[in-house]
Amino acid sequence: MLQKTKNQNNMIEFIFFNVIIVVVIQRKDNMPVKTDIQTISGAKAIIETLKKNSVDTIFGYPGGVVLDLYDELYKQSDIKHILVRHEQYAVHAAEGYARESGKCGVVLVTSGPGSTNTITGIANAYSDGYPLIILAGQVSKKDSGKNAYQEINLCEVTKTCTKAAFRIEHASQIQDIINNAFKIAAEDKKGPVVIELVKDIFTEYTEPGANEFQESDYIEINKYNQTDIQRIYSRILNSDRPVIVAGGGVNRADAQDEFEKFALRYDIPVVNSMMGAGAYNKNYKNYFGMIGVNGDKSANEILNQSDLIISFGCRFNDRITCMFDTGEIFSKLIQINTNKEHYSQDFIQGDINSILSDLNNIPNSNFSFSKWCNKAQELRNLNNTNIKISNMMHGFEVLQKVNEFTKSKNVIFTSDVGQHQVMAVKNLTLTPNRRIFVSGGYGTMGFGLPAAIGVAIANPDACVVCITGDGSIQMSLSELALCRDLGLNIKVVILDNGYLGMVRQLQEKNCAGRYSQTKLSAPDFVEIGQSYGLDALRVNSPNEVDKALECAFSKNNTFILDFVIESLEIV
Image (cartoon, rainbow, N blue to C red; front, top):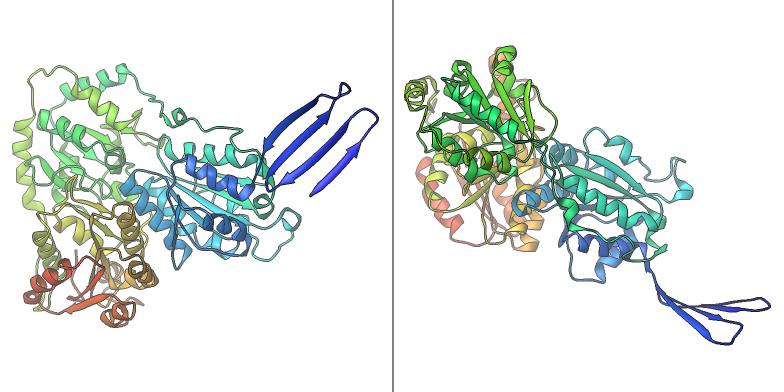
């Protein structure tokens, strides 16, 4: 393209070669002044900005509005794209990737249904506090607000379940907004940020590097001070029956080592929330289990009997507080968290790892709570034991055998929500090296398999085991194609009881056994797996479990194990 304009004194020629603009100005003294201005398309600017934010993987599903961006992805090799089979599972997979890698998960979808399909995944990540960037296509500016084909205002729809939501309408905004989104997603309590990409920006041109990203922007500002540290220490000294709560924030902050040091130093009883599972070694004598509605009676009772609760990274949502007199609990609670959401009058905001480190650096005055911890051992007698109610194989038997078989492995388990989730947390030995990623605050069926996919992509050498139910796995069966396409090594353990087990259990308790719409039909999971080109086995008896596990773990591919278990088992 060549365009010329002239006036009496100057001649200006604009010459476009690809994306290079060469400006030649002829001065009155006939000495030329040459300036090179490099521009790139908005689509390429997005890719380059993602690279600067250390993005190497995107989970997504293409569509017409984002065609130019996908074309730009095709032209490069630094960022790999994972083609999911449903946009919701792109978000769950990105969250699994974020949990395992410690990086920000990135999702790319088109407008309309492609965008709205992400909402459950966004809400899940928001509730549990993991950083995601959702890049969603949007109709062109001229069509905006006219109820155009596949138009939806995703920013408005998701404003209650995101940390922030932006719309980019001009290519010049790309770098600033994307860089800012990564910063927001990673600071304080982490979470998802939505960015709508108006179609026009992909073919507009902008100058690269105009707003360089500074890695120092990621640094989180601690809001606590040493007065807070001394207050915590003083309250511990003045207590007789303290308890420490490990919430999901301990795992998110990778603060397990400092947490363990703190708990062992004073021999204080430890409990955890569902999201805090694995933050502390459950084999330690001062570990008393999980609190909350599906928790251990010993853990709930030790909170009741305590005179001080020091909570690290636990929200104390209704799944916990429904078991207690909240007024009493909150009156003796020190709540330590990265975000501002709290219920305790004594609340400290800051990085959990840093706060624990400061507490551990206080000179030891040689006191401990061993007497209280020893007395609390009696509370273990309150816990329910696993009981067989028939000759059928039970879920807890399967998971105990899975636990025994993998005891020498550093396993990453994933799960969804329901009986299988509770069984997993209670029957697996979870430590900082044997972790479980569950859908905690939002309770999303179908989360386990795509989360396992994200983990396996982030850490190809990891031993990944998805514990799921016959209800949950039917929501995300389509993603088995991804396991085959990518050759992922995931063991899928299905606890197949023919019911929506947790809801059925509630109906047994609250509805006199009227099982309304909870009996569940299912396909043949073995044949389904094989149709996707995967290995699969059905297991009907406890005597078959060990052999099935040996077969599954002997292969470095995705293997489906369908365990047919007692339908009326309770947790």
